[in-house]
Amino acid sequence: MEIKKIGVLGAGTMGAGIAQVSVEAGYSVVLIDVVPEIVEKAVKGLNKAWAKAVEKGKKTADDVSAYNALLTSSTDINDFKDVDIVIEAIVENIDIKKKVQKQLGEICKADAILATNTSALSITEIAAATNRPDKVLGMHFFNPVVMMKLVEVIPGAVTTDDVVQAVVEMSKKIGKEPVPVKESPGFIVNRILVPYINEAAIVFQEGVASAAEIDKAMKLGAGMPMGPLALADMVGIDIVLAVCEFFVKEFADSKYRPSLAFRTKVRAGHLGMKTGKGFYDYSK
Image (tube, rainbow, N blue to C red; front, side):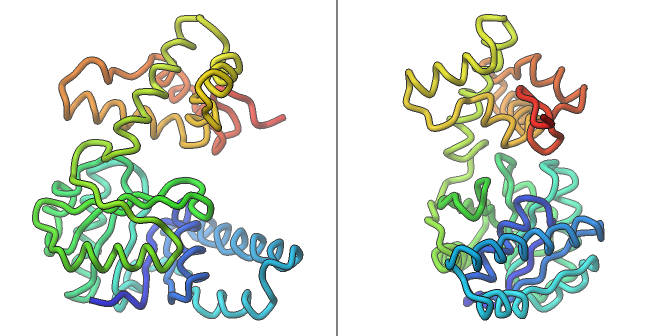
């Protein structure tokens, strides 16, 4: 099973990043979002990034021309009909993902792989909503996609070995380090990382220290490259909250109970960098 043409559903930060590393690796890519403005913004963002790379001598004008020749953008999900894999990078909501993956299964050719860029959700449950559960798996990329090397590759209960191997090989070709992971809530990274971020938010909520002080302490005292609350802002506080809630549901363990600080900020629309305000103010 060889992957030659990649579909990316969702042209937000993650989807655009996945599309970028894929075309730069020489893959033909179809980038789709149902919102025209998001698609347009993504394509402009990619060309802006490539233009900067040309200015710095890291890429050539011919490289950029080749990338644009490989990239197709659209708002019509039916344009995935001839891709070898679709990497879905939409909202972290299992009901929406199941609905979309079911639709993709009906549109894509019979041997196409369906991948979901979920942070923590059940691959098996998502796969069961499709007409090809044996060809569904998780590909958990990390933000920013262009810089972060890891891709967690998570098979569902009936995902075949050849599908996993094809995705592992594709991940290597786009410059990533794939790590196969047995399905479990949060996989490896978020299973460990999200409770850490949540505990930092609880410390903030209790007034033990400010966000800046908490982050400074963890960077200087634990050698972390980024503080946990700045990381929450980068990931998206709504995403961190959703993962915490999923852990509580799956594990039935109160140790995963999310900080009230997360709920307050989400209710206020302060989701982090993407909204200009979270634990920090990015509008200044």
